[in-house]
Image (cartoon, rainbow, N blue to C red; front, side, top):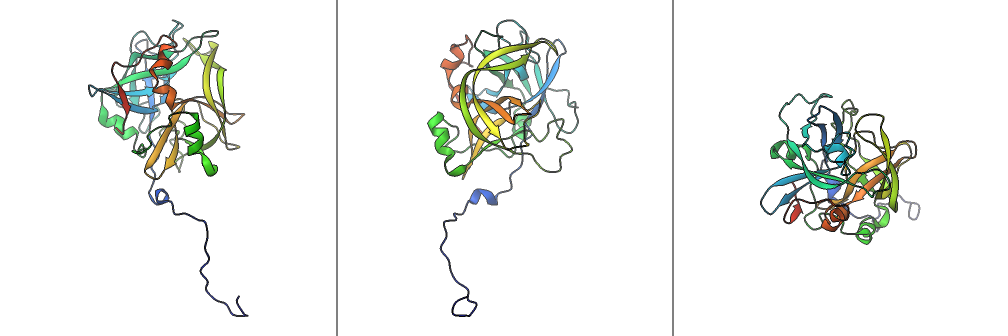
Length: 287
């Protein structure tokens, strides 16, 4: 009301347009079913795909996903390569042709007191089906991944939250009417954080030490078993910045633990646990 009359007024505000909100965002279907040569199997997700100088593509996921119930061999990576199948509509994939094959490249998953690095590379054997898994996730051209902790905190200024892109084709989410996106804030970077892993067969739990980002999710939200490998991202105007890979969670505490992206792409991190990366330079890309 101005002078007793109802008038239309222009009022300046600090609201900024965000063009990324205008785009429909599909949830990725990165869930996979990993089957070893010994017949043991487990669920998980793919974090990202990288490409080598020779054009070979590799998916990155936790070792405990690509090597189900990892052996107590000091590496935690299956001696014989497991095969991975994409989950589509049913609990067990109906497609009998794998889209990935585990490799010996990765870190180490070993019981206490060894230091673990829960990462393994799988060679992409069907790029089209792996590309379909990442539908809805496109890495930013300007800023594809967080390069260190200060870079991550800069991305999270002004209250921006991380998004854990849990797979829509997770076997326990196939009935969900809406895609699930879990929002989280960084709690701390924890060096040699004690985490519990299951080795060799169900029930054989062992303590491992792993340096991770600790995230706090919104109250009442948590990752599920089978979400290991989910990419953690920050949305920006031209896509997503890859922040890291989810490897473990606590449902009661609404906590998640993540390997940061800058460690996933650091050859020295693999060398520190006597692991290896595929030969030559690799780069993150949109499959």
